[in-house]
Length: 330
Ligand code: NDP
Ligand code: GDP
Image (cartoon, rainbow, N blue to C red; front, side, top):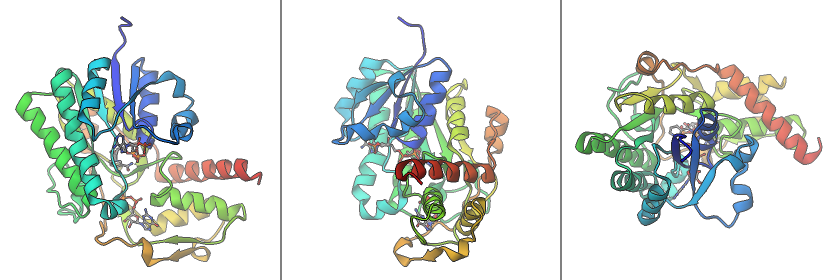
């Protein structure tokens, strides 16, 4: 017996999984990750490699849609803490794949809750809930008491998973917490999300590889923070004596247009010369504004968002310049 605390993380190959594992390792945890089988096994752990932690994590084959596999993994690992980060996480794709999104993002979370209830009922559980659940916002600033109004199959699936997490806490006394996280980004953000699409495009334009970026709705606003800060909030939630739900946000909202302006300013270019609007990137139903109130997380967890948006944008643009420069020799 190592005496170390054991954490099991689903979605370990994603943005948050990578940063969370880095944090848990720095706290002395034995870290286990659930990884779904892929024919591209050589590239799937690129984020863990970027953070130089791939060999420090014990990987287990499994898929959120396969409860028998989840039960097996939880039984083998005997975790003290379980972080359920895996999901079909891209809102736009959820209209193309509503049932898959429901299966993975919604029912998959319940599969995980069930596996933990059956095999490790004392383990602490974290569910990755989302500000997308507020959708057509019912209050200008959203906190834990704001009613939800999902606007996409993704948001509806997340709301089901969130409600079930609360239900398992109330029904079975499980230490199950839900973090309602507003958008958070980093150099490890998936390329299809708007922030990374912009910073990748800015780097390509600066290096002379392309001239334009095609985007959808430039008027949408989001409360954008840094993923590294946000995984700290996840961990803090599971260190509390009582499980609860928390909004995690910066309290500042910025339009996609202003994000473009900041990213192009960073390399001395004018965004209006390079950004074009393409209706292909509009959504069947839009979430126009998100702005979170993180007061509860600040008061109860002592959590603060530390990275200002300007610093986040610079870090992302610099990382893309380096990544593309290395690949193309520019
Ligand atoms: P990513 O899209 O970067 O990562 C998603 C992870 O889920 C990947 O590791 C992916 O594996 C895994 N996954 C997908 N489907 C399955 C499946 N069927 N079985 C097992 N694993 C699967 O998301 P983020 O890291 O950005 O987000 C983490 C979580 O937080 C997600 O649940 C997301 O919805 C939620 N969230 C994110 C926010 C954000 O702004 N980033 C805001 C609020 C909530 P693979 O590598 O094989 O694709
Ligand atoms: P989301 O908040 O989880 O949907 O995160 P995204 O980064 O995918 O989208 C944030 C906002 O940017 C949404 O309101 C989108 O409509 C808007 N947006 C504008 N253009 C684009 C685009 O080209 N790609 C993406 N992904 N979003 C875009």
